[in-house]
Image (cartoon, rainbow, N blue to C red; front, side):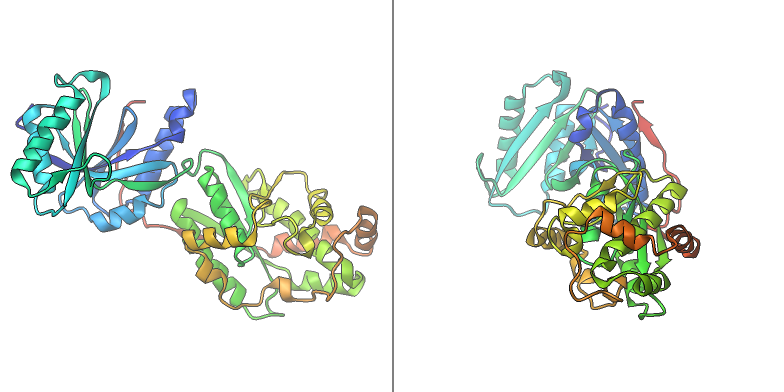
Length: 404
């Protein structure tokens, strides 16, 4: 056993998945598949499931920088680390630590060893002491147990060990695909991409719906929203963007509905069209980037007017979040700079100067009675064009092995 050479791998630890009881195998299978898709063409040979972790076995020419970037986009991961896989014997552990530290310069360090199932014959504190002495004999450094410049971690399982130093925080959450499908009304502004990403982090796959007013306005909003989808698709690897022509529908509303109520009527029509697309695609809820009180259409009364016209849930993950919080999150997920690019979307067309902030059900229903709502919704759905996005291209299928 001790003759096997150390082999390169990435150890992936999860947190929330471990609380899922009987559904844990389902969540782990999805996380394994997502990791394989994210790391396509990066040199991953196989993904294995071991107690408490997944292990990505690497080819000798694996692209580690790109691998790190790709793994960091996969929801469901608490942390991950490039590591050496070794047989669980003392000589192999010592050799792996020296190999991993070769060429590094670090002013202080600590050893953190952990034995799963306590099978390894040496207790953890003895492993720490002996490996610490080994490092001190070979490197000009010192021990610091509280704030070390470098932490060497040794995980010892019954049939395998792992040694690593560069632990990277993962994005957390649940693997995309375990919580069903939702349809996101994606405006191209700052808020809705953040709402979309939050749902991905809770394990949802997205169908993305964008309302545009071309040819009444330039197609800049469509170009911008495509770029946003290219950011979001990194988390779920395949997505569809539904582009819904809304300009003609808005024109008919303008001809029949008084100015103050137009925004609420627009939102109700969007919700109905979004629901129809959601039903067509198997999505179980609508998602918006609305935050309570942020603009006129997002007062509690106006949100109620939108909610009451659809039969499926409308999820509003930003409802209690202020703008500064949303901006910080947008920067973190890489959508902010895209969202602030100037464009003209349907929200800028035929918008009254003083929209109603507390529309009553009776007033809105009376306004809609002047419209052929069913025909407008049908026209919006019929005119919707779907575009497909993928990330990254999957060149080969790599097996996921291990516990069921």
